[in-house]
Amino acid sequence: MMWQNIPYRSKWRSVAKGVHVTAAKDALGHLIVRNLVKSYQTTVALDNVSLETDSSEVVAIAGGNGAGKSTMLKVISGTIAPDSGFVEFEGCRLQLGHVSDARSHGIAMVFQDGALCADASVFENLFLGAEPVTPLGFLRLGRMRQLAMEMIERYQLPIPRLDAQVKDLSGGQQKAVALGRALLYKPRLLLLDEPTSALGVREQNTIITNLLTLSEQGVGILLCTHSPDEILAAAKRVVVLRRGRLMTDASVDGLSRSDLAVMMSGNA
Ligand SMILES: Nc1ncnc2c1ncn2[C@@H]1O[C@H](COP(=O)(O)OP(=O)(O)O)[C@@H](O)[C@H]1O
Ligand SMILES: [Mg+2]
Image (cartoon, rainbow, N blue to C red; front, side, top):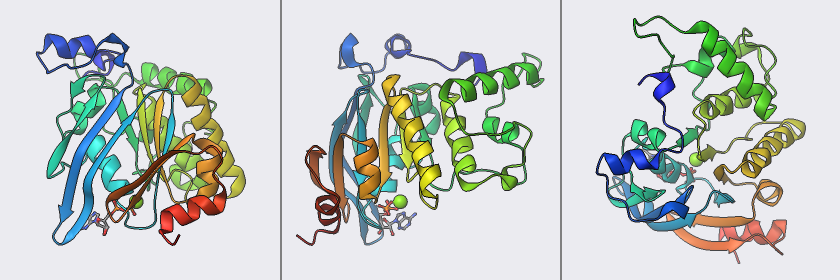
């Protein structure tokens, strides 16, 4: 895909392509997840999970190890296909199992490990696999540098230098590079898989501040986490998964750390 052709707020394009459209104009940022089922041999990773979110929210997808959080984000981002169920974004049914389709609808995912190449520079990592090229196939290096600088400035990401090697960065800076790579697509829905895991408190706070800024700018956010503190700091709504099942979908208002811990562990 040509870089300059990456669509932005382009749901009408899908109408032109004849994709089934159920929602009206006000559906910008609206996500519908219906009856997702995904099994791995005898493990049911997602057991009939349904969810609706809007671009106005940061929704925490919470749960312990193996709850199904990553699987859910991977389905929405097109990384894996479910056994059954569907996902609609802004009124368009997504082609599940196709990252490029989710991306073309404005959905981007930041993987837990960042999926970074440690021996490459920040600059190379930001554009990995999606380098903008001229019609003759030459890299548009000046344009890339400009896009990267603008994005880092706009979101105030803690990335030191574009030519720094990723392996020389702190954990928080590496997470910021992974986040920056997703933001280059100007997503309207951002899926984050444990974005602050293995970070110190200060770096965690920086990432959370970035997420809140993005939310204020109208980006919908699904934030996978097992941390009650992170839920309280970032989200207004919490969806709890346990062994693939959606157990709770509630406002965070009035919930304490221990309420959230109990909801996730199921030891009420
Ligand atoms: N590729 C896979 N192959 C086999 N089992 C998997 C695979 N991915 C996830 N699972 C299983 O599915 C369940 C949910 O996993 P996951 O979505 O990664 O949970 P979480 O992110 O909440 O820790 C777990 O029991 C996990 O072992
Ligand atoms: Mg996970």
